[in-house]
Image 1 (cartoon, rainbow, N blue to C red):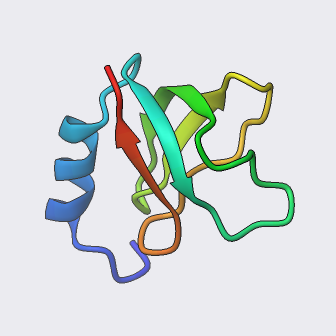
Image 2 (image 1 turned 60 degrees about the horizontal axis):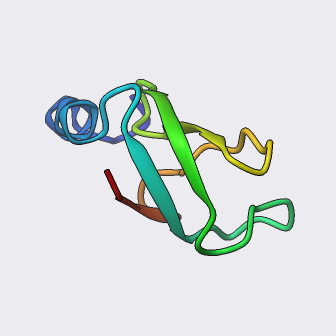
Length: 73
């Protein structure tokens, strides 16, 4: 699991269940949606990335330890 403890992945899955709404706080990617963009979580993968369907049509995941978002529902 690329060094991410299973407990962390399980915590993220509970904190960000599919269907919850999030707001992007930071993403270090040239294709990133603008900070403040909201989206709907579609799941958390086994390396801790939060998979999001952003309202602007983007599908970039929030990478654990690199990017950040917060729940807003």
